[in-house]
Amino acid sequence: MKFSGQSIFQKKQKYDLFNNKIYELVEYDKTVLDIGCATGKLLENLKKNKNCQVFGIESDKEMAKEAARICENLICDDVESCNLPFQKEFFDIIIFADVLEHLKRPDLLLEKLKFYIKRNGCLLISIPNIAFFLARLNLFFGKFDYVEYGIMDRTHLRFFTLKTAKRLIEESGYKIVYLQGYNQVKARYFLLKPLGKIFKTLFATDFIIKAVIK
Image 1 (cartoon, helix red, strand yellow):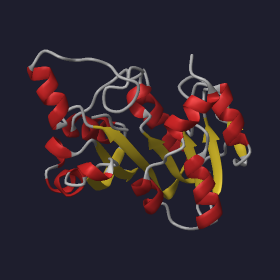
Image 2: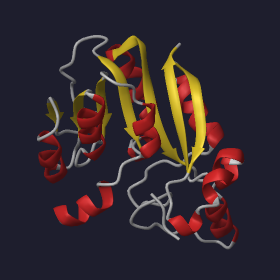
Image 3: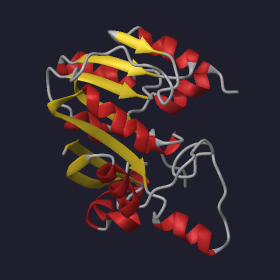
Image 4: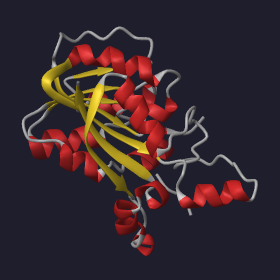
C-alpha cells in the first residue's frame, strides 16, 4: 500500500494531485506562497476558485516552468539558501505541503519566514507521520525501505511523529491553532479517513497543521 532522473510526465503524475484539506483551509482573496509548489496544481486551484494571488518556490526546473504559468512570481531555487525578494509581512498564508521533511534545517527556515507573514497570517502545513501503523509494523519486522513517494519517500531527510512535528513548529516561534490527522488514500482504504481523525498518531498518514506567529 503506497501513500502520498524522472521525466516531466512522471513528475506531473506524482505531483498533480494536491492536498484537499490544505486547499479547504485557504480562505478567499488571500496572498499565498506555496513552498515546494511542484507543477503548481494547488496554486492553480486557489487562483481560479478562490481568487488568491499566488506565488511559488520550486527547485526542480521542469516543474518550476509549469508552475510559472500560474504564479505572479515563481522562484526556481533552493528555499533554504536563496534570498527571498518579498517585503515584510507580504503573505497571508505560507504553505508547506509535504515539504518540511525534505529540508536540512526546517527549524531555521520556519524562523526566517516569520518576517514575511502578516500578523494575522498563518502557516499551513502537511507533514507525514512516521508513526503510522504500517510504518511501525514494517519496523517491527526490521524493514525501513524507501519507496518513490509517501511516508517512506526516498527523498525525505527527516521523519516526524505528532510530538516532534509539534515541537518543530512551536520551538520555531509559532502557535498551533488547528491540527488534524489526514489520509488522502484510495477509496478501498476509506476506513483510514475516520480512523486518522480519531486516532491520528496511529492511523493518520499525515498531520494537517495551521499555525500562527506567537
